[in-house]
Image 1 (cartoon, each protein chain N blue to C red):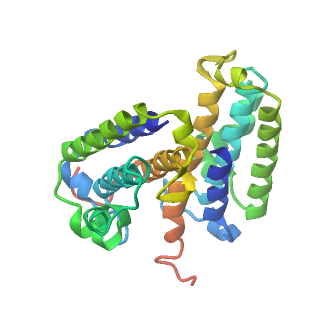
Image 2: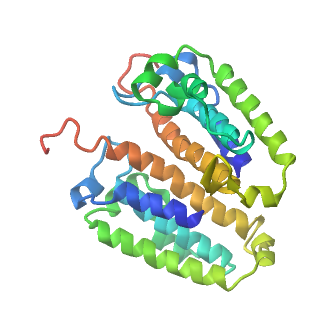
Amino acid sequence: MLSHARQTLLQAVDGLSRDELDHLHDATSNTIGALLGHAAAVEHWYQILTFEERKPSASDEAEWSAALNLGEEGRRQIRGRELQSYVDELALAREITLANLAKRDDAWLERPLAAAPEMNAHWAWFHVAEDEISHRGQIRWLRTRLHRNRDVP
Amino acid sequence: MLSHARQTLLQAVDGLSRDELDHLHDATSNTIGALLGHAAAVEHWYQILTFEERKPSASDEAEWSAALNLGEEGRRQIRGRELQSYVDELALAREITLANLAKRDDAWLERPLAAAPEMNAHWAWFHVAEDEISHRGQIRWLRTRLHRNRDVP
């Protein structure tokens, strides 16, 4: 499910230019680039919770805050990057996730998280896929409207 | 996962009026109402494929076409309904899904579908959740913009 979600996310952004990734549909929209950065940040966040078995630290929060929270901070900080930069960041995050999942068993998957006992790793990784799929829906919507009402063809 | 997706879908539309459900963000948008109708139609479609073990018929296609394909046909046909009408349709569909899943086992879940051997029921039902989550992402985006640039408060 994680792989399918990622594959369809990458298909949804395939071929986008830096300008397209930075395009703001309206004043409170997230750019497609910021939504890609968000997907990588969410994956890192849940790696910390599930594999490192700890709550993210203040320095983790500082590092990922713009991509996690999006909005004004995301619009200001996440821009000017080529597609490949987001794709590489996502690929690196996913490599770490798959390597860590491969080392663990189903009992681990179902056990409550030490750092967040209200969920288990199974739910956490479902939620990573779910969040990515939800934003992919937004990305598809935004992409079909990239060049409306603009002079660029 | 199906239940979580549905719960968050219903939260995303809670309290919307008929006018809000019928609101078109732009000329090629789907209304939130049409996206709710789509979720019910997708569920029915996969019930036919997985529980009835047959390809949907021409009359199934005729019945669900507007909600499945959305776009122009969806904009024309799916409107004027109160939220409760969509919620009831979704609840009825889900009741049928859960009753049917409860009657089957994991071997059934993993077996290729007779009517669509390129997938199994596990993938089919993941896809139902996935499609719903993707449109929920769009619904959340559309909802935050319902009353912008309009006179209605």
